[in-house]
Image (cartoon, rainbow, N blue to C red; front, side):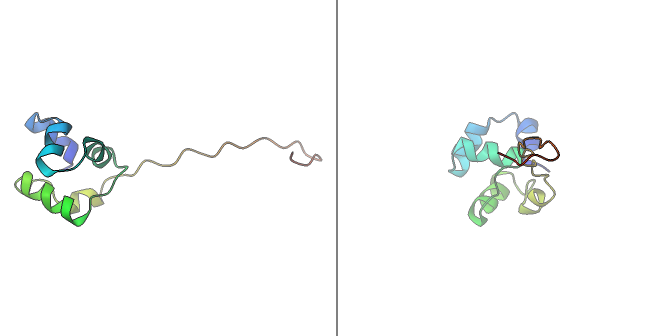
Length: 82
């Protein structure tokens, strides 16, 4: 189960959960939206705090948001880029 789903199901705020496992609320947000990865200590704390409902394996299937496409300037044929 995804951590974000678990938090919603349990009606627990990210801030309260962060306090429970002794990390920053920003780290919990990153874990929920796929922009952060849990350390071994944090993964174990999450597993314990969720009674095994969220495990390290649950983060493996999480999709990481893609980096936005780089901004490129169109080049007119026959002209060099500036």
